[in-house]
Amino acid sequence: MTRISFDRRRAVRAFSALLAAAAMGVPAVHAQQPTQAPADLIVTNARIYTVDDSRPVVSAMAVRGGRVAFVGDQRGAMVLRGANTRVIDLGGRTVIPGMVDAHGHVANLGSALANVDLVGSTSVEDVVARVTAKAQGRPAGQWIIGRGWDQNRWGNTAFPSHEKLSAAMPNNPVVLTRIDGHASYANKKAMELAGITAATKDPEGGQIMRDANGNPTGVFIDNAMGLVSRVVPPLSRDEVKRNVVAAIADAQKWGLTGVHDAGSSAEVLSIYDELGKAGQMNFRLYAMVSGGRAESAALDQLIAAGPRSGINGGTLWVRSIKLYSDGALGSRGAALLDPYSDDAKNTGLLVSDPKFIESISVKALRAGWQVNAHAIGDRGNRVTLDAFEAALKQVPVADHRFRVEHAQIINYADIPRFARLGVIPSMQASHQTSDMYWAGARLGTHRLPGAYAWRSLLNTGVVIPNGSDFPVEFVNPLISFHAAIARQDADGWPAGGWYPEQAMTREEALKSMTIWPAYAGFQENELGSLSPGKYADFTVLDQDIMRVPASLVLATRVLSTWVGGKAVYENRVP
Image: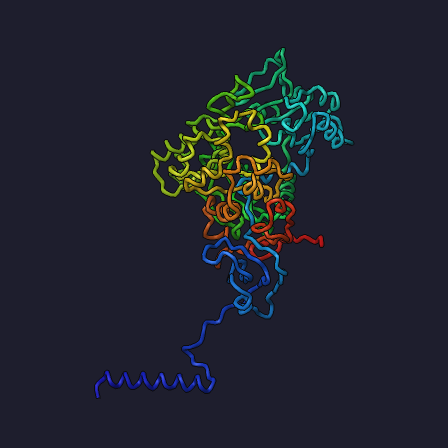
């Protein structure tokens, strides 16, 4: 008997034994499936938009160890049920991946929650009344801080002058930041403490607004804001920490599971690290290190130390630098190629030398850092793209993912450059619906086709991570989702949308708040979709924003917010 025939006979006997065992109901060892550990959480009876093209809509999901273990139907999910598995029947509610604001200001939001809230103020008299009410009981000499005024929403859209504020608050210094963070409004007492007089010169990249006699009116644009802010007593570290914790809780209430913090100070970064190490950071923070000219020396040290990603249990990423090209459109600080249509002598402000942006970009490319530069006007965007292009010629890097933050007004010739250079336009859809009432007066109709031009950019092949720029805009991310698909305000104005050809589809709008921010933060393998292996960050909504009429999107409530499979916010209102 040959060896081959012996092996064949042995194989036949083994196969026959397997058949016999199966017929008797005895499990065969080699036919067993590996036992899977039970899930911690199973969500059923839901409409789950995964933002995963392989299974875009499912009805159930299982979570184990803070990550997605399964997405599919209820039968498949319940296979993973164990004795201690929590099972939630959502009664047909909608689930989306946790929304991420790709451009917010966490510490500033915390300060705004603690200080005078001027959002929605209707006049300088309303501003003064709010300040006076908040200052009740404050001792003389104590600073009063506020934020949120916007003269474009007043009957008189001119910048305010300090007289009414000074008369109401003669003994307390007051400084109030404009809603966009690019202008401040101070009373006489604050200017006296700062030593500001008619002889004070405008700093580079800033402007002191003056009356006909050259006296400061109390409004300071962009880099001139520092003339006052430098004498405001800084918050203690404990106060900053309380503000950060309050801001994160507020963000979670609106369905956010993470934020790209656009300009974190060293102190705020240390607070994020401290909270994460203590297990008190149930949030994903992609921190952009503030990189203005004043911080350049410290920035060099940070760049040399190298980037950090997903530390403290995937709660903190520190691998990007925030630079600043120009100011804001609302305060006429955005740098334009041609003068403002409503201010013929003004083309805005470049707050940083383009060569500085180029030099930091070169250092960042060599050390593996991302650069995210604020640019709003068409000149601001062009010089930023020029600086990035010059840096990339010196240090060619394929997957750098440099970003332009805002990219609001772009000359049509520059739109294709984003895709060509691999630069991501990080935009905030709610800016369009806030600015559309007066943008035409600022820019003239000839520049509006390049304003908030999402479709034109998307058609070149780029992605657009969405956000709010809070506290410039309201935190609620559904405002930006609605703006992206409708280009209308909450009242449905204008009919048909403002330049509706630039709108996003709903699928794009959802991606702009989930997987596209993840890509913009080098996190797409960890976040952004409900795919097996990724963090189980998700938001439960009481309406299906992918199917309800656009007019109902803003009526949608967040029922719960989950980070790593744990509820960090639950709406108790029935």
